[in-house]
Amino acid sequence: MTATRIDGKALAAEILAESAVRVSRLRAAGTIPGLAVVLVGEDPASKVYVKGKTAACEKAGLNSWLHTMPADTPQERLIAFVKQLNSDPAVHGILVQLPLPKGLDARAVIEAIDPAKDADGFNYVNVGALVVGEEAFYPCTPWGVMKMLEHEGVKVEGAHAVVIGRSTIVGKPMAMLLLNAGATVTVCHSKTQDLPGITRQGDILVAAVGRPRMVTADMVKPGAVVIDVGINRLPDGKLCGDVDTEGVSPVASRITPVPGGVGPMTIAMLVANTVTAAERRAGIGAPGSRIT
Ligand code: NDP
Image (cartoon, rainbow, N blue to C red; front, top):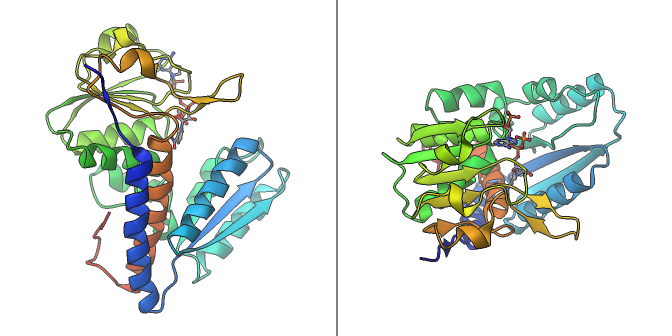
């Protein structure tokens, strides 16, 4: 068996094209969806990520604004700026790029974002809605993974899904989305005992750790669907995921590549969330509906 590669780039392009159609409808009704991205400091990886996000917005016909602030920006000034974006009618989605420089309280900044503009889905209101299984802005990376599974026709209900990683932005919301979709979910982390023994039980295995190629063939159940969220830069400058793709491919049924897997989906879902926010404000689409 050799695992089929799940083409995140192609699916992301489809979702961006769908978003573009929704944007045309909004424009015809007098609304141009807009995403405000706030980048504090000079983190090189963050600079690359925000560039990708604003470029995708422009491609789908949204407005996007990149606001850069110095690393020593005081907390109060950053929060005041977020509140200014909250009251700007041209802005439908707000994203504060994480991680923030040392000394800034990311949680306090995220909580300052109007939940109706929380395109990243990190605000307590959206996190709470996710936990109780209601419509919300879901965090873009795990939401993108769910879209991939759906597109691939992977049966989540009744499957045993194993998630490695318990971060607030990936692991926990990933586990919650899988649980809400009817999977039996096991969440592993750095304190987990016998990690391979648990991962080998996963019909769906999601790796969101940040350790290059740590998931090896002996950790994967034959026929499993393997989703590699990790983005790691190797000393030679190349990117790799958390999964040893070459080694795992003969064991798994499907696998996401890095790059070209989950990464593009994260951006596509951010655009989709912003469009949804604009539709809700414009009263287009059934209340609470989620087109993507
Ligand atoms: P964090 O560092 O916040 O979380 C990593 C998680 O992995 C933690 O829960 C940690 O456990 C767990 N972990 C660390 N070492 C081990 C180990 N040896 N065995 C089992 N679990 C372990 O990372 P993120 O969740 O933010 O990101 C994870 C990866 O995904 C990174 O490579 C990141 O770059 C990538 N990423 C990719 C995105 C995309 O669009 N494709 C978007 C966001 C992130 P503990 O909690 O106990 O410390």
